[in-house]
Length: 395
Ligand SMILES: Cc1ncc(COP(=O)(O)O)c(C=O)c1O
Image (spheres, protein in one colour):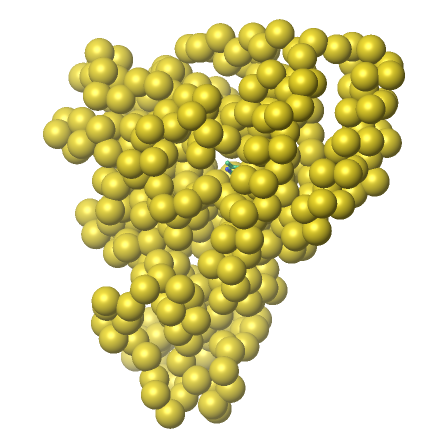
């Protein structure tokens, strides 16, 4: 039986790695997939082994063959030195920030970050005595003017997962490295398939596997990958908290991993088709999709990304909340709900006005974020077409 190893995968394309990474059939009685190991206690044969914790696995919080399979596959895919798995994407963000920031430090956080990332910084980090400054996502190397002697972390999310500004990640990570500052990138939208985070300079990269890795809206998981410099610190912080992922969610994520490339490419195709259709509607005044020239940072997306995924936003012409409700409440295929990246299409209305602090978010009308699923695209367009008719009738 051919047994593949990370070393043996060097030079293979990501699509092939997705199939082979993290699998050791010879250790699983020949079964193709690593089974779901559940467990807290691991037994040691002798007292000396117990004292020395001399075993490949020593306690449930520190890993099982199932977690090891996903960690090693993600490490390969991300081009990292190592990966840890957490219970949610937000826990992964918290873990990365707590790995790099200490009391008395200053961190720079992109203004377009996922709102709960901001809340973590404004509450837990602030309480720890960490100063937080938000910065404009359009700043690249000029971010230097905001760096203080005690700046230890720059947190990025590119593109922002509601407003889709694309950041100059290589410029920011080069600046940070020259000053000994750690960069943490929330790479959830692109995944390592469409944006290799460490090759672009990030020290740590976070993925909310809840979204595309799962792909089925049936689990919560976070992944943090890190470079050789940062992985030992990340792993030590992870061990101190033991905020590990649930075994079933890890198993389902491994299953999702095998089809990630196919699902992402289909999400990309569907979303581009819908975004082009929306851009021609008179109810839509702007499309915030990184592959569209109207999106802030589109040139950076073209330079640095290998694809786009299924999540984007549009700005609508001004209309009342009641009219928007008529449009959205009557949709038959697009459901309203948080999260994204599943097989089903979702839409949410959003408004960042109340919490943006370094930039102004002030569109003339409502904003909608779509997560385009795997339904037939013509059915999706027909659903929205009927929604726009209700909107117009209610205006
Ligand atoms: C960009 C981004 N990062 C992180 C998260 C957090 O993931 P989780 O829901 O697993 O905590 C989300 C969730 O919506 C997200 O959109």
